[in-house]
View 1 (cartoon, rainbow, N blue to C red):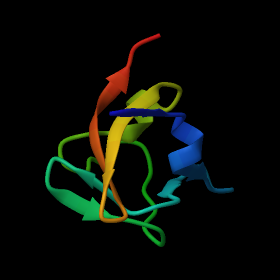
View 2 (cartoon, one colour):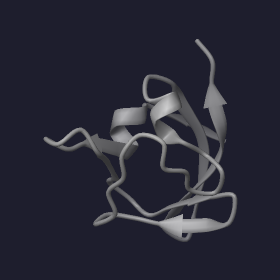
View 3 (cartoon, rainbow, N blue to C red):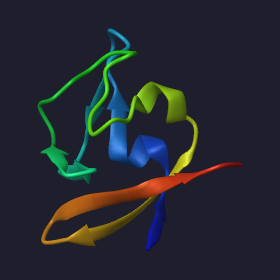
Length: 73
């Protein structure tokens, strides 16, 4: 398990939406660069805006970052 900074995995776009920088898998839902979403949108049951300033617990498998949770600071 590795620890990643949120903004190393996601970029915040000029319009305020978020986009993943790499392929990610969240609770079986896989998506990657080119996808953007705003507040209130959930992927795999997770609204990433709620966790924007937290570090991410994940592991990489075959080029996909598999989310395991978030670190509470």
